[in-house]
Structure formats: C-alpha cells, structure tokens
Length: 172
Image (cartoon, rainbow, N blue to C red):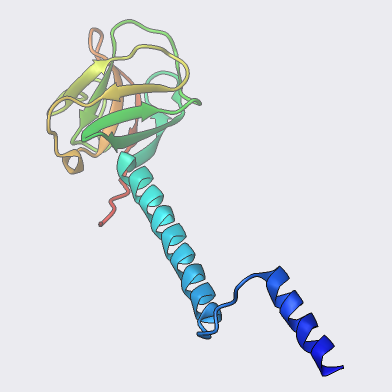
C-alpha cells in the first residue's frame, strides 16, 4: 500500500511540474509585488509632475465691470515656458471699438479710463467679446509686478473693466 502512495505523490508532482525547494517562492512574490507597486507609483508621480509642469496657473481673478458691461473669469497660465492670459468660457463683454487687453501695475479699484494705460503693458487686441480665449503675454515679464488685467477702449479712454490678479504661486 505504501508503494501506491509514493506513486500517487510522484504522479501529482509530475502533473504540477517542477517545484523550487529553496523556500523563496513567497519572497519572490513579495519582491515582485513591491516592484510592481514601485513602478506604478513612479509612473503616477511622473504623470502628475508632467501635467503640473505642462500648464500651471500663476494667477486668477474675476472680471468686474467699471464703465461698461464685462463679466467672467480670467487666469494667467504658464505652458511651455511662456505665459498666457486665459479668458474663461464665461467671459462676456459688450461690443465696442478698439478693445484691448492690458496688464496693469495698478489695482482694479484705483484705475479708471484715463489712467488705465499708465504703466500698463499692452498684451493684444481683444479677439472676441464672448467665450474662452488665450493670449500670449509678450516677452519675459515679471507677472508679480502686475495687480490687474484690464479690458480698455484706448481710442475713447473707456475702461470696460478688469480683474484683480490673485497669485497662485507654487514652490517646486
């Protein structure tokens, strides 16, 4: 009877295939799991940092009306080493001549149609009076020196409105 038991063991072992008798199977599984976890975490961190560095919000604000109808959100974003003014999808301005976008060192509360361009930097003519838009900020400007973003009719010195820029600086 003992011979039959040994034959059954051999048959079972033959069907299962060779086994490692070094006792490392659990350690190997643990090492394999740890390696998978490490690689997954590394990929997640890499994707997060890539997304973070790809486009970063430097400042944001909300338009307030000064002399004419103006509303919506705005932000200044950095992508590919350049800075952009981004007008959100909810941006809306009343139609008018000669509408331009300025970055101003003055606060939105203290500026008016006559003082809007004083010390300000012209970014570009406003392309559309509604909807999301993006404008590249010229040169290597220090954004921290500007307190507001203005929509201004330069021809008639009418300040449509603007938004205070709240810095969202990130330390990396």
